[in-house]
Amino acid sequence: MSGDQSDPILRLDDVRAGYGSAEDIIKGVSLAVEETEIVTIIGPNGAGKSTLLKAIGGSLAPRDGNVYYRGMDITGQATHELLDAGLLYQAQGRNIFPEMTVRENLLMGGYTLDDGEIEAAVDRVCRHFPALTERIDVDARMLSGGEQQMLEMGMGLMVDPDVLLLDEPSAGLAPVVQSDIFDKIEELNRNGASFLMIEQNARQALSISDRGYVLALGTIELEDDAAALLENPRIRELYLGGEAESRP
Ligand SMILES: Nc1ncnc2c1ncn2[C@@H]1O[C@H](COP(=O)(O)OP(=O)(O)OP(=O)(O)O)[C@@H](O)[C@H]1O
Ligand SMILES: [Mg+2]
Image (tube, rainbow, N blue to C red; front, side, top):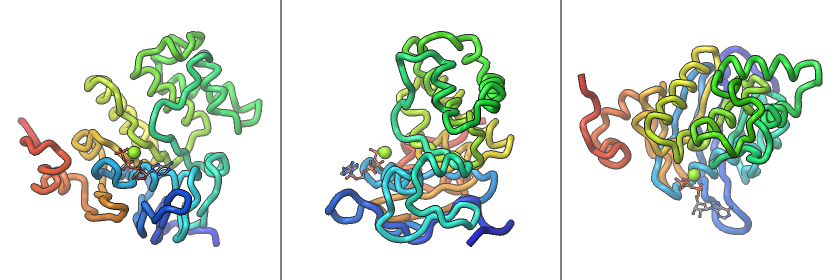
């Protein structure tokens, strides 16, 4: 039942998921994230990327198959139970409370913590995100898009998760701010966190990733090292805009 050292930190075995009585959107997906890896899922709009992450992150129960965290079966567990275990799921879109201050938002992110742990968690998150420290008493709605995304990540980091499931963390941000988000993900990864993320910005996401999966029509079409995906002519044509990859 419980895992050992050799288990990947996250593993999916033939997961199927969908909505209501409609046919499966996710049609049997198996994948793995090893400890301290960054893994990116790319694929066309409507491929089922968000649905897959929901089925891992506890907002949609898989219809079949299993999800394992460090070898423990977590299939169908709720998002807050997963958070307690160390696995953070952040859905697509900005999940912050605009009318609350930065500090109040961080406290919401740490709602599962004991009272005695909360202040230390706020301090730790503020060290990761100095921009938030400066704006700690400002309403979240006053922040820039990039700061709001930092706040959302900060809320998730209140519980110090070791796996982060992120659905389009750079969406809707200016290119320079997107780079800040990817830098932050790399920094957190260097500190030991593992990532499974979905990104439209496939080029930048893959450039900080160890491996990638291509999801199309609810199945994994291709899995490879991120560097190989960046060089793959078909992937470049379909998902990377087709232009030259690297400049000196
Ligand atoms: N709540 C829902 N109820 C019913 N169908 C849904 C729901 N959410 C998504 N779908 C359908 O599931 C399919 C996959 O959607 P999903 O959001 O998982 O795709 P995606 O790969 O994340 O797309 P995008 O790149 O646009 O974010 C689509 O056909 C969509 O219409
Ligand atoms: Mg999506």
